[in-house]
Length: 322
Image (cartoon, rainbow, N blue to C red):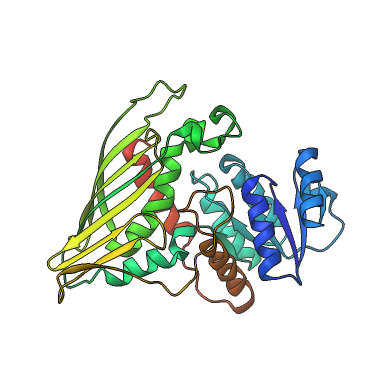
């Protein structure tokens, strides 16, 4: 199978590395307009790289779109038009969604959207414990100071500094799909937000959000690009039930109603981490969703998360003003 990875920034490089680990028999070609990224990727991964799709002279089966979100729609359309299966990173805007959904169906190819947290074992465990027989509340805080996201570059040159694809919006696009999946369909969300920092941005940098779910569950979601300490902290509780999670596989605790004590939950997967990334960035989930993509392409299994579902999530984010 021949795979094109479009965009050779940090995420594109991660996808190449993981595809090579999982499917060493596949051929990977890199695409990036920047010569320095092409040269680096060729040296790191022993692959061929080109400046554009039109430079390719081989048959391609799949494309991974790993560029900045606002460029995704046109690239997805181009790849689908060529009859390629498409894996795309978070889009953050739903430009071209309806058109590309129809085009994928017309070409009979897979259109796959990354939603990495749905493939994390901690998230799947938490979801399995949210009993439909109980009413649940949760408090969930995710935050990190915007300049610390990519300390090797200015946030003004990174899409998280753009109003349409800002850091708070990205956090919400990562977190809301799994909250919707685990706690039930979101029926309403209301936010209090403003700008707390002196950052040179034209969007709100913190949101306090009340979320209501169709089944009666409800939560408080705190999202910001303000906190000087990178934080991901969840507490969920119901009658005789309590779960806490600090964002890493080793830090899930659950209340035992028999012993009336908190116990540490041991997961099945051994967590994989990459040097240079925060502890709550786990490689396993990235591998799991790549496997899912190729399982859909080769075996036609149902998708875990779709463009149709993502459009509803992005509409909720729009309503919050993020």
